[in-house]
Length: 294
Ligand code: FAD
Image (cartoon, rainbow, N blue to C red; front, side):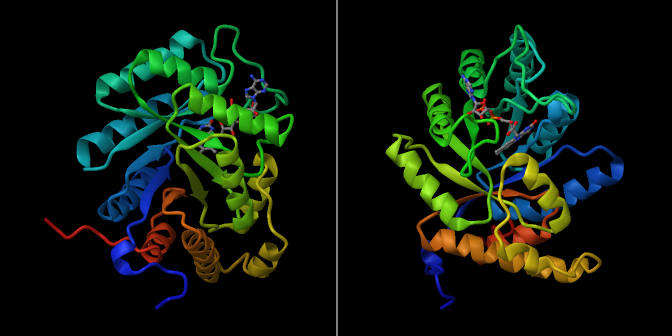
């Protein structure tokens, strides 16, 4: 048997897939091809991001509504509180509830480009924990929140960041989804710290299959995810060779998820970037199989 994989009978990983709302007709088609390909894997939910500062409010809503209307999937809508009043955020949430959406991924959001420090809106929810409490007053949503195995870049300390995660859970969130990471030990140590802090809800690893290493390196510097020393070497010389890059990316992510699985992790959230191929292959390695037709 493939080392580290559970026997098929036990192999039913719980999956969720994250998408972003498309900006153009071509991207819309790409997204829907990905959704259709991944749908038979029966994820627990699929989530749709909310563009920086709420810039995709309408497109996020439209994508989530179409998922509800045209698929058997359970959608979760991301919602941020940066740059909006409590009344505005509550109205967006209420509209989701009325459309039949029952799951929100509640986030603070980042300050707008060019503004270094985060400033809460004067009438807004200041942090994600306040947003979680506010959403719970709007309707009995299922609420997921963000967690940072390598600590959020603006946190005063890892302890303060963990306290913040605990506050979000205490305010009503029932799942944490992590920022992506590449060092499995970092995540496993974080799980231990969460447990020690009394966080008993699922803390689900966010898995980013790296289809474009140069882009991921740039983004990681901003969001506080570290690039392990072995990683640049693996992608070296493949800048103009997307096919080999994809194969290497599959191996990197496969090793990561299998190691997590061998350590008892059975729930995974994939940052799909609206592409199905890597996510589908890695989910397959984890033991996921499409539902039989009919
Ligand atoms: P918070 O939990 O509010 O924490 C933000 C920072 O403030 C942390 O450093 C925390 O320690 C600190 N803090 C919290 N409370 C206090 C306090 N009372 N006093 C002082 N410091 C405090 N962004 C988007 O724009 N759209 C998305 O769709 C989106 N989806 C995401 C999904 C996931 C799974 C993840 C991990 C991130 C996502 N993000 C998204 C990015 C997110 O908005 C940023 O990482 C943002 O900087 C922090 O959001 P948060 O919800 O973690 O904030």
